[in-house]
Image 1 (spheres, rainbow, N blue to C red):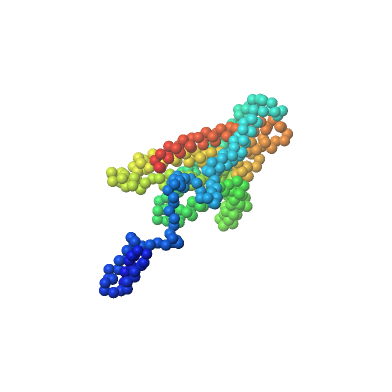
Image 2: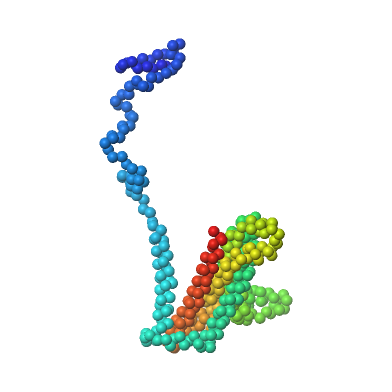
Length: 345
């Protein structure tokens, strides 16, 4: 072992002998040359940077990376609402109070007391309410089963929710054509029943109110599964266990615990389904070509009337009434959603 000691300007190095067994290096008197590569200390007279300045200022010679403010995304969303929702609503509201020669008038509102308008409103409300009730009931049961099975079969939940997302948007002419190709006069099931069993089902039921309700349920049920499933996920399994510990059964659990908690979410989902059916147009227009049994069909007939230009103002009044109904439904849905969100947090 080498023993290094410094004496003045000379360095003495001792080899590995018996007297150098301690191996001590005297660093206190160790001489460091001027050409050493050790960093020079910062002079005390220079200002020292503060931690705040290091965090707030970027290093010199480097550009700060641009950060997009969240307000940009919010402003784009509100711009979209202004162009495609607020502006059309404003145009419809102005047109409802204008005559054919662009003068202010209230005569367009006389269409609301006509017999065919009242019948169309009644049919629209009945179709929307019944299809929303069927869709809410069946969809809630399906969502509850899916929430129960998703614990042991998570892949099943992903597949079913993806399928429901597609089916809830499958409407319009495509949906009407699918039902006509299946249950129409020359539909697959109609021809199959006629050849195998000698039974020729009446295919005209598609162009009736019950047939329209059944067609609407095709996209109402998947929509209910999507919107009601998050509420079911908020139900804790411990609540059922606590009910059983205190002597309750399944009926007690659903009527005293889960039912009151899920009721606002269920009612809000029903209102959403009602507004969805009330504003649907393309499916009914494909099934009822020459009939004005719904308010959207009546609006389309008045807007396409080229012989009577005064019908445009009446169509704007009907569209304004539909906006009012949907706005009320969405407002109630928002109130119920905020109430059900209290226990979901």
